[in-house]
Length: 264
Image 1 (cartoon, rainbow, N blue to C red):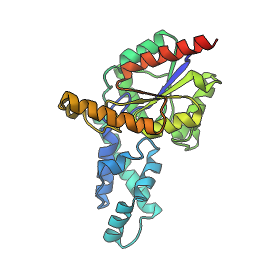
Image 2: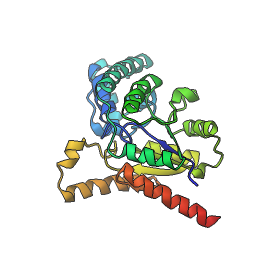
Image 3: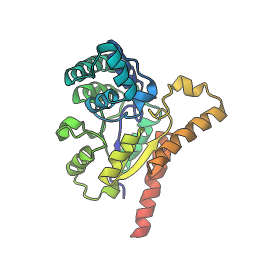
Image 4: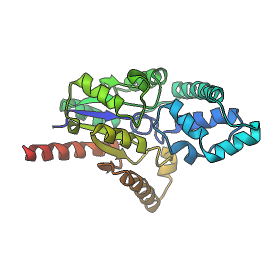
């Protein structure tokens, strides 16, 4: 039987479209005179933010812009300054606006009803998560365990360390009894590295990169095309399951439980 579900946060359970980190990254790099596209930001979304900034600074276009601006490549001090600006911007945004995605509470209550533990991993820092966690709790979403890379000596995703930490805390030895749910490819890699079942969420995901309004304004054919585009990305990294909405997770849990029952 499935004993635990581990959710990501932004783009999965809160912040439809994972907009907060995109806005904060753009602002921090703009302060340094560097322009970023959404695609450049989202390609490594889900990593610990310090690591993510390092990835962005390694992009050819960013290096070129930096050379033109400063006649040199970025240093560790430059990275630290961008990280500080990013943190300030993101913390401000999180205080202002952190909403649950549709279906989160219904799915969370289903898991609680059937005795399935709920935990989370994230690319956010503990300081960021304190804000998000409190706002989510005000709306009724209260995972038993909220883990950041700071709990595992900085080993952020795609390392399996945070999931392994959760397994120890929950006293679960078999990774196949755990589901990891996320909205980025890094989420799927994290789950695969830990040996757990992986589920990618399509709508409201960082991979889709649309706000709720933008998605709702698409016609039916356009919505289907967008969903299929994201599904192909998840399938390209061999996610075990891909679902449109968090509400569809119930079917995955029931399917896996039935499959385990048959094996016994």
